Picture 1 (cartoon, rainbow, N blue to C red):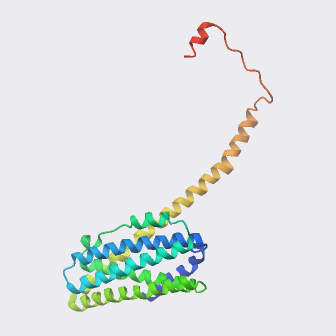
Picture 2: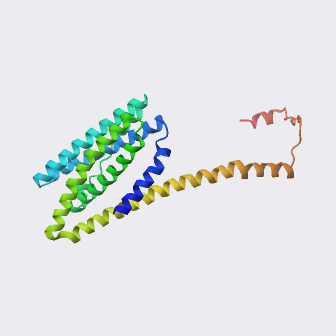
Picture 3: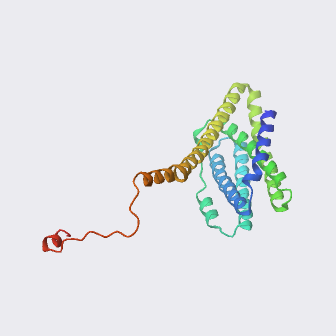
Length: 245
C-alpha cells in the first residue's frame, strides 16, 4: 500500500507541470474539480438520507457539506483566474450523481468512499506542494486536503470496526472490487486518450504526407493542360434550352 502511494505521488508530481501549465488551464482544471465535488456532495446527501445508522447519517451529511464547500472554493478560485464563467455554471449545474449508495452494499460503498478520498487527499497534497509559489492555491489545496483526511479517517475506522466484528473477508472483497473498478475506469480513460492521440497522428500523416504525394503522382501521370482553355460552345437552339429545366 505504501509503495503504491509512493508511485502515485511520483506520477502526480511528474505530470503536474504539464497539466497545470497556464492560468487558463488551471482554471479549467479547477472547474472540473468543482463539478466533481458538487456531484460527490449530491451522492453523500443521498447516502445521508437513505442510511439507517444514525452515526453514519451524521457523518455522511457532514461529508456532503464539506464537498459542497469544496465545490464553491474551487469555483471561486477558477473565477479568480479566468473571467469567462460560462463553463463553470454549466459544469456545476450538470454535476453528475452516481447514486452509489442505493446500488452498492454498505461495506462496498464505504470502501469506495475510503479509497476515493485517499486518492483525493494524495492529489491535493501533491498540488499543495506544486503551488508553493502561489499562496492562494497552496492554501486552498492545503485546506481541502485536511478535510479529505477526515473523510479517509472516518471511513477507515468504520471498515476497521467491520473487520474486527468478524467481517474481514467482506471488507477485503469490497476493497478489492473498488480497486478493480477504479483500475478498469483508468484503463478506459487511458484507452480513449491513446485512441484520440493515435487518430490525430494518423490523420496528420494522411493529410500532410500521403495526400500531397498522391496529388503529385497524379499530376505527373496525367499532367493537365496549362493556361486558358477554350470552353466548348453550347447549342443555341430551342431543344437545348428545354433540356436546362
